Image 1 (cartoon, rainbow, N blue to C red):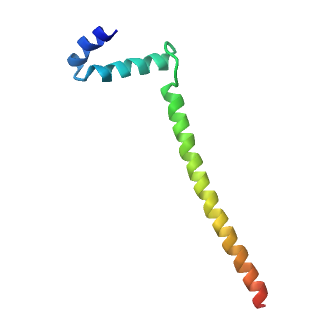
Image 2 (image 1 turned 135 degrees about the vertical axis):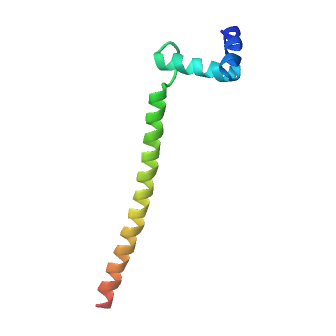
Image 3 (image 1 turned 135 degrees about the horizontal axis):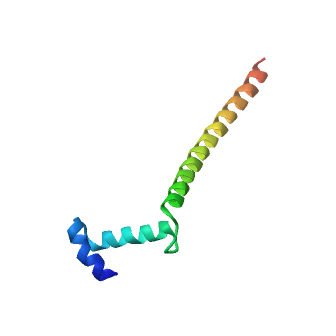
Length: 79
């Protein structure tokens, strides 16, 4: 495999390591090789981004809730 990669890589304008990683990626995506497919990796990345956004939103809501709760207490004591 490596000999084939070494001979083909210069012809397509890349280094052998890059071509070999592309071949391995295609093998994983087609089920020939074990591993996480490109679509699965993309989905995990999207879910992690969404999770991060939701955590940030929860923090904002917690702070806002505490602020309004304190404002309500202050209003009650002043009345």
